[in-house]
Each structure stands twice: as C-alpha cells, then as structure tokens.
Length: 476
Ligand SMILES: Nc1ncnc2c1ncn2[C@@H]1O[C@H](COP(=O)(O)OP(=O)(O)OP(=O)(O)O)[C@@H](O)[C@H]1O
Ligand SMILES: [Mg+2]
Image (cartoon, rainbow, N blue to C red; front, side, top):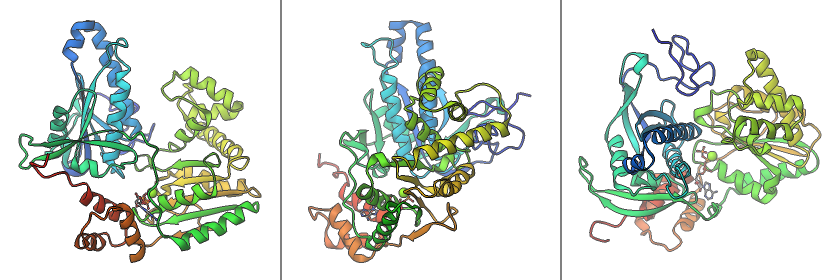
C-alpha cells in the first residue's frame, strides 16, 4: 500500500496521526462528510490554448508547473488548502481543515497575490500570464472524495463553491471577482473594490452583487479612534515605567472584535515609533506549528526574500547574524538540509531565537507587540515567557492582545487590561465616524446599536453593510 504523505511538506504520516510530525499541518483524514463555514477560491489561467499554440507544448508544460508551484506556495502562505489542480486552474479552500479568523480576507489576498505574481511568469515581457479568480464564502459540505489515500481528494459541494466558479467566469482576465458576502468581510483600507453589477447566475434564485477587488493604494488608515480612556490611562502609566528603564508586560484581554488590536495600534502610534516596535503574530492555522510565527519576523529582520534561492537566503542570514545564531535560524527557515536529530534541532533553533530576540529587543527597539497571543504555539510561548527575565533592567514593553480562550503569556507579571463592550456614548461616536454624512436614518441607527451590543466590530460591519448596500436593480 502507498505510504501516506503530508500535502504540505510531503513528509511521511504515521497511521492515525492527526497532525504532520514534520511540519505540524493538521491532516485531513478519511472522515465523514461535514459542513464547514469557509471560503473557496477558484483561479484559472486565461487564454491558455492560445498561449500553448504560441509557445509550444513543452514550454507550456514547464510554465504550468511553475504556475502550480506559485499557487501552492501562495495558498500555503495565506493558510489555505489546495483541493485540486485542474490543468490550468486551481481550487483552494480557506478555513479548512482548520477554522480561520477571516477566511474571506485570506482567500482574497491569495487571489490577488496569484494574479500579480503569475503575470511575471509569462514566457517574455510581451506575453504576461493573465489569471482570473473568483472567491466566495459560506457554508460548504466537505468530505474525502475517495476512500484510498492514493487518490485522496477533498470534495466540497454547495452554493458557495458554485458561486466562486460563476464569479470566476464573470470576471475579466487578470482580475479577481467576489460576491457581496466576501466584500463585506474585506477591510477597505486593504482591498479596493469596484462594483461590477448585479449578476443573475445560473442556479441561483436571486441576482448577486459582484465586485472586482484590487489592492488599496492609499496606506491603511486607522479609523477615528473612539473612547477607551481608562485603558489608555493604564497603558500610559505602564509606558512611563518602561521609560524609567524597566521591562513591563501587558495583555489586552477581550473576545474577538472588542478592539484590542485597534487600542494597541492607537497607543503604540502615539507612544513609540515604527522602528521601535517589533511585531509577532499568532495565526489560527499555525497555532500547532512549532515556532512558525517567528519565521516572518526573522525574515523581516534579516531582510530575506522568501522567494529567493536557498543559498542566497543563507548568505543573507550569515551577513545578518553570527555563526550559531545564523545556523539556528537557517534550520528554522528550512534553509539547511543537513539532517539533525529533532531534539538537537529544536535546541539550536531555540537558542538562536533567544539570542536574536535578546539582541534585537532592548537596544534600539523598545516594544515587542504580540498580536493574537491565543494562537501562539507552545514553543514560542515558552520563549516569550522567558523574555522578561532575559531583558531585565532594560527599557522594554512586551504587549500582547489575547482572547480569553488562550492562556496568559506572562501569568504572574503582566498588567491585564480587560476590554469590555463599548458604552452607548462611545458606540454613538463610532457610528458618527462611520457615517459622517448622516445617511443612516435614526431608526436604522437604533437597530444597529441594538444588534451590535457595544461590540465595535459588529458596529462597524453592520453599519458598513447598511451604507454599502448595492444599488437596487434598475438603478444602474
Ligand atoms: N476604540 C475604537 N475606535 C474606533 N474603532 C474601533 C475601536 N475599537 C475597535 N474598533 C473597530 O472595531 C473593529 C474590531 O476591532 P479590533 O480588530 O481591534 O478587535 P480585536 O479585539 O482585536 O478582535 P480580534 O480578537 O478578532 O483580533 C476594527 O475594525 C476597528 O476599526
Ligand atoms: Mg485583533
């Protein structure tokens, strides 16, 4: 019987395993059919028949291989799952097999990255590869299409999958189409959108509002910050203590959407400047991947281009850090193929990271911001727990945002700031900032207040949905 291998790293999988022992990816086993809320991405290479005629079968074969590699790596970067390739097309799921915080945003980001990066894969500058994409989000029924591991394929069925395919078919080559539901989940500071019109798709009872998305070109602007005076006063007091030469730890604690990240950014923009802040991010799809959240930080600090050849990246690491640190970081980033026993490997990586953090935080950088600490893996948590001791006597702020379901990062030492739902006056101020022209009728505003219950995220989403309702049929 064929040995089962991990879809992500191709490493061998022991029987009964739920996670890959090599890379930590959650495995899709022969499980019963189930219903999942997720996002679906279809991409397709436009005009592939004409391109094959122009460049020949062999060149096309090589081009498609590069295209598939690109898709695979972009989908993995965004935490998605490649369900299948169909020649010059791909189907991927986001929010599967593990749930994701905003699968629509990840799928949209992957779609744009694939469209942009594949344009550069073309055989020459005059022949760009034009890829189109469709993204939809919603409930999907998923299950393994084949019982045997050899032909394993995860099948997804439902309106959401059809919607992504129809959106793909409706869009122009080189662009990405999404429906209303996806559009509402995208931060306008990150994604620009153009209304394509109401489309009556085959198999759908109602017309669908379709949008073409692209990257927003203005820098992401923070919304007008509202309220949170007591929390800000506590943060200011901690900051004064840091500036007096102490290491302090703070956790902003609240359920999703209460404004932890917004508060942290608002405070840090005022207190520290960009150069002084180092950021580490927990991600739901990486919460079981040991030390994975540190990779982007290491790459950013060392100025690595993850798409560059391994030897170039190694050279860059050696220029950046001394021998053992550079070697440990190379192991972490998968740039050193020499086989090393797992425990020794972990130890080298851990020491290198500790050395890196100690030499980067403190001298010159005053803040380590740990975003979404509830998704930080246990190994990284252990490193972070040791940091206050290692940095003692230095002017350093370690600040984290955390949902209550996660464990405290610094259980004994941290100042914990609990964020509660916004009181009515703050919620009113937020709504006024979201609707500066006063388009929303008083009754609609009351309805938004009642439904949002003081949770800023809900206030924002419901208000935007009301304000951005597409024009009714005939209005165009
Ligand atoms: N004080 C505030 N003033 C204005 N807008 C706010 C404020 N707090 C939150 N918001 C808005 O509410 C939304 C949700 O806030 P934020 O992302 O900070 O929540 P969070 O607690 O970090 O959630 P999660 O746990 O999901 O990361 C943001 O898009 C932000 O624009
Ligand atoms: Mg947040």
